[in-house]
Amino acid sequence: MIIPEKLKKGDTIAIVSLSSGMGGEKEFYHRYEIGKKRLEEIFGLNVVTMPNALKGYKYLYDHPEARAEDLMNAFADKKIKGIFTMIGGDDSIRILPFIKDDVIKANPKIFIGYSDSTVTNLLLYKNNVVSYYGPSLLSEIAENGSMHDYTKKYLKDSLFKNDKVTIKSSKEWTNDRIDWTDKSKNSEFRKMQNERHGFEVLQGNGTFKGKLLGGCLEVLNMIIGTYIWPSIDEWKDKILFIETSEMKPSPDEVIYFLRHLHALGILNVINGIIIGKPKDEMYYEEYKESFLKVIKDEAKLTNLPIMYNINFGHSAPMCVLPYGLNATVDLEKKIIIIDNGGIK
Image (cartoon, rainbow, N blue to C red; front, side, top):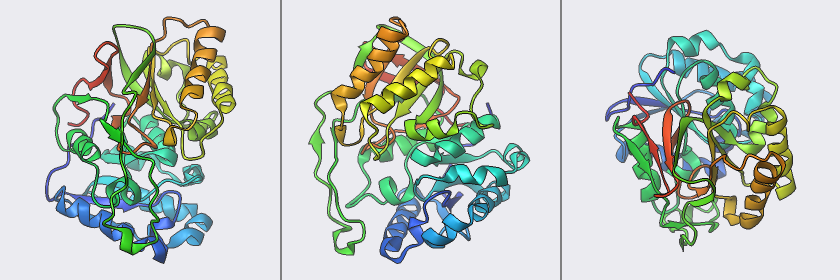
């Protein structure tokens, strides 16, 4: 895998909207401005926004080719050192026909996003470029009040340093809701809850290792069978990371997805699984039962280690996971170590 060069103060990064056009709508534009300002002031970056990224819901829905054009131009521009997503959505899979793989391969650089950005993360993986499953501009970076320290730490550790990264459970989390359209609430902090569970071991002991590969369950389900879906050989010895979105799929839907992975042979060749904190802790116990029902009871994979309730994906705060890089999961210490940092 090609590891992108780390970011440093003064570097130029681009904002792209590869799915939802939310950032371009007037009721959310102030939130875009907050996120942009934080990237500039907290991280010292020069932020440019690609031409189509602020054109709103209808235009971006009608023109997936324009979303892809922004992404390709951001990769091709030598001055741009990293690409951040505005927000997720549900249809970035529609940009795939307009992607130029040769542009990505010739210009590897940081790309970060989560949720529907699983599509682009796996697109980069297919092109042998490491990318990052982590915060987007409108949500985590423009977090009400200020960015969570936990999120800020793992952005800095993952994209600006090349040291070993140790991921531990956040001591607190939130499912509080604040109206994004209400500018008067921009400085209002969401109410936090103490973390009652920490990282939980569902089965296994000791440590397991492998390269990270995965994403958002609902998006992965859309991608199966497309040209960016990893082959069975590419899944061999990987650590599957998987999480569920704000759609909060039912425990049965999780079971059906896992059965699909088993039928594809994937569960038999991976080295272990790490699972994100469920959105709002909805189905917290039921999801555990879904994973164990398929993996332990049906597939009889009683030695496949599983760690649960990790702070990534649709979780606030969140860490950053690099695609295709080696990680060590310590089930005794309940930590995840990105062995060689995650950046060059």
